[in-house]
Image (cartoon, rainbow, N blue to C red):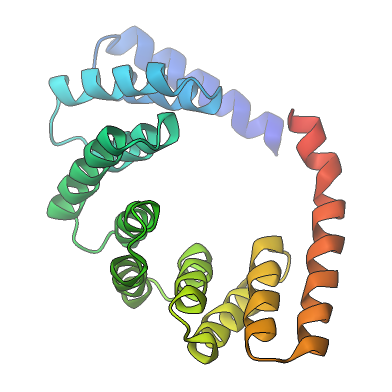
Length: 205
């Protein structure tokens, strides 16, 4: 399946490069390729070129916001990312991921209440967004609302049992509630999942 889809992607890219080498879509593809190689600055440059060619190209504002934040978490980068995520929401108010990323920016600014509000907006749009459940649980623990955090993190584990971060955060919530045995169980699950994922991480490295 990997080979088949890779071949199809390569053919589609070759056709695009031949038909419209300087199109917004071509710059978007080049940006995505740069991002896959962790060349965030290169990706940002290509996304900006894509927007110059077509300011209405779908998903580019969201993807540019992601790259700005991946490239740097300093406040100027946060401001640029925030602007792009808000532009993405202006185009598509139902973009749960953009709300989630705005929550991440608020979290980086040490504003857990604002972050939680964004995570909850994301979950209202997409209840299956595991990262938003985990992030909401993390914020609720910090806000000393561990019982509510427990609900969010249990749902994250239900949706994605192999998510090691969900188990880790769930263990923290249990610990906060004084449920040591449950906390130890989740910490064990976290360590087992982390160790099982390590060969894949090493392979990608």
